[in-house]
Image (cartoon, rainbow, N blue to C red; front, side, top):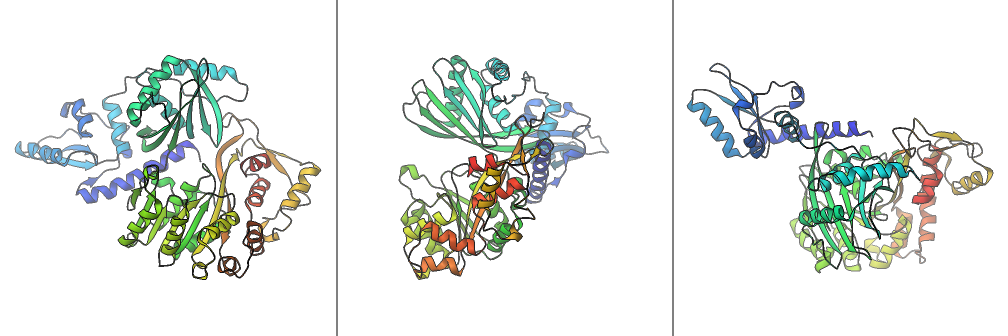
Length: 541
């Protein structure tokens, strides 16, 4: 999805939230998009300082016949609104206060008080071996004002839709890299003096020491204003001392609620139907399986968002909380200081939740407690570290033991990976060689014809990336590759002990007989559809 469309969706979501908030606050709602670029400014009504301080802007100069109009935000003090109304009423005039969104306020405020800071060039990701671009970006980065460097880096990473910023000490310089679409790209080399200022800013805002001799974790939140929309960026900071200095990784979590939508994940119809079944009858357990960075959190949060209705109580236990969702009670669990998910789960079950999400099942105690919760009418969602659904199911049996009572507890396991998506305007079709054809045929040999999507395994084409000005590497964005195991009667036999050999191979064989597509099969089919490449599938899976 292109950036402008994402910003448009964010602004839409922000306006809907503001409209709901206006009803709660008893204010009239106003969509500033209708006039924010053409509004006649009336700065004489209020000082720039007061506009910034109270998050309010004048909209219309009134008279003895016309009301004075102001645009307030949800952060404007209610006491100020009352005082404003009263002061105009005392003069025999009327002040009308409308609620506008944070994005609308920012656009109008930028007109009342245009930013005076220097606009630096945008960061461009270098192609492989392109030292000129790295040199140019390095020059820009080293010229950015000391107090703006951290904000500039974060803003540029968000613009590039990067998931991480890596700051790494080399012997004579500091390397900055960004992870875009799952791949790390060198961005710039910065001077040691700039690095010290940057680490000082990170330490100050994330509440960590920039001179510590041990690894540390911190957290920063930053509002990003772009194209008339505002979104909150959650940034997790991890630092570690290395041979030449303290390295840092900043993980960017851009989980605004408008993006947490199952419809946006590109889930194939059959797999989506299985998830819809879980959402429509919330009970039992659902496990998300995959390594760090495979998109587990996004899928889990999207399912939670689909379940988030006024008639359900939803609680989460997370370490740490990656993004706040309205209407859901989210509880942090500090596992580094002795807290456990199992203890937290036992406590929150007393609050009578309908749906519980556990950040991760890591130990036997948590596994057994979660299973018990799932057989007493709750829906339990969690993540689990394993390579595949069958490996996860086998591991879960090892943790909770053979138990007929638990056989109907686990309902669905989803293993997923993220692969880079080919950029359609520039991708190139080609004829695979015989060895590749044979490998594809072997991978897909037991896939039912109706799941092949009309592909002829004796005569098929593949696609490769080609450079485009909008996609320097021929890829843009990522797609989800999913393996979903529905725990039906045949799979339940392993948990009941009816089948003694509960190893991953036996479980996968039984699941494939019931229509399971493995991760590698789902990935190869995505390549045959022209969505990605075989090389990308083999890299990720």
